[in-house]
Image (cartoon, rainbow over all chains, first blue to last red; front, side):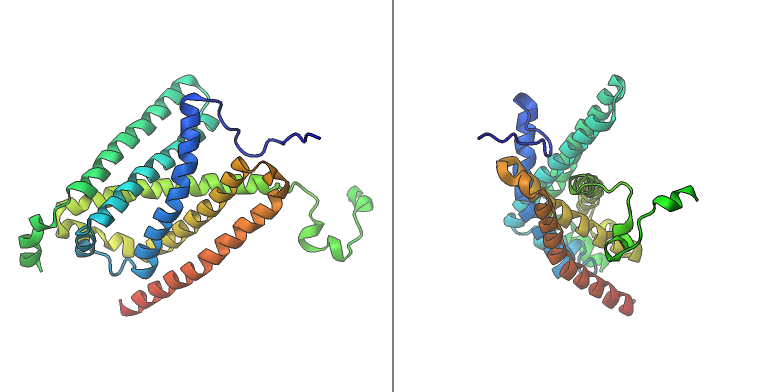
Length: 137
Length: 142
């Protein structure tokens, strides 16, 4: 007895880039459940925007663990989110020219935000500002 | 008033919301729409958040100067909505993965959707409570 599975949700792509994107979407989603919700609970519930300031970030990024955590989260969240936006573009933007334009915007955003995000997480050096922080405060 | 003759006589089961005979979206449509809206919303915030955290490189004056934005009540309410959107997106994402990798899951579509709502509420109610309390405490000091 064979039962035909009705189409529920998005069909798995048969191969190529779309299949990689399909797997990446799910794998990054699973990892982000822990990374992003962990981040939200630490930064928005346990601590709040009242406690968080420049010094808070500097102390937190003293630890390579949190830098690695934030960088992994940046990478996964940005690509997961822009992949979702790409699927939305494919759903709604029909004319060829506008599709090329929208996809170009998304890839550009991915590149630019990965660069500025990585610069923030990886090159931030609080000791550069020690003097400024003391004279200012 | 010609439709008056064909109207269903109100009984206990046809009163209120159950009396509505128009289009009712299936659970898959609601969960899909919410997933897309929350996903794009969180993405929009993520882009803003990457820009603001980039500013730590410009030192404490610049960074702290801009924090008034995040401490504004309108933004704090937006922050709670954002966390709710993220929680829903996470819970519904698990449902999507289940349906993708467990062929029989389609039979439990409705139950899985109710499960998503239950998980979402279990996470969001305590979170929202703590965030609103923190917001009121901060508001009291200001």
